Image (cartoon, helix red, strand yellow):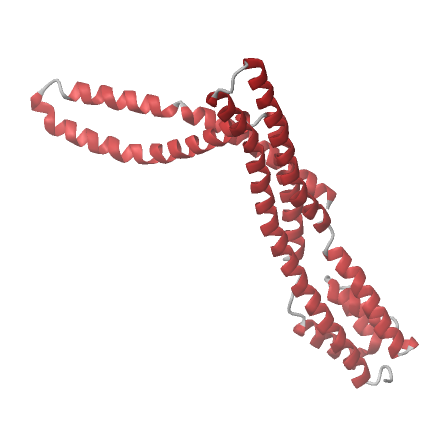
Length: 286
């Protein structure tokens, strides 16, 4: 998990830096395209005999400008985000951004882990019952040992306690189910921390920004609308950044919680089937 989080964090920082760099490069492209188009039109307007060729050239340029306009919009969007980031103050805007990167790193790791867990254990339960009927408890234990997933781990712990009676089997299944649930919920506490921390960091930047705005008013000796508006805008940008980070992480947090609930329900249903299976095959007595 640590290696995956570090890798995702590094990739996120690299892609962020590339996005800002591309934004700067794309911002310079529209001027060149516009100047090229102007020169082309001026050259075609020299002679009336080449009017047909000029229209064809303009049409071809219109087709070539379609991808350029899309790139221009993307570059402008990145430029706006970068400008707002700088206006809000890199020191305080970087803190919600760090929460977002760390939170998304944990989210991606959890999504990969949770969505690789099978939620339909009907086939596995049938395989365990066939192994139990054909080869006994040891055969069923071998099957569980060689199968990945929380259900297989719970089944192995239950089968390993069959000689101690049904009460011990049920107790072992319940206790190890709690262990598996804790492993599934690993990392969620950090996501919830970032959800709560990002707006708080944004509010902190807002308060400090308001203090700076009042300091500017005090130094100017006059309550100028320009000074007040600029200070308040810069201060509120940190709050907006913190709220955006919290909204994004909250959506993913709810997705992870719903997935964990589905896996836990599947584990509980499979555990009940295991106990019934052991009693049905006479492995343990009720």
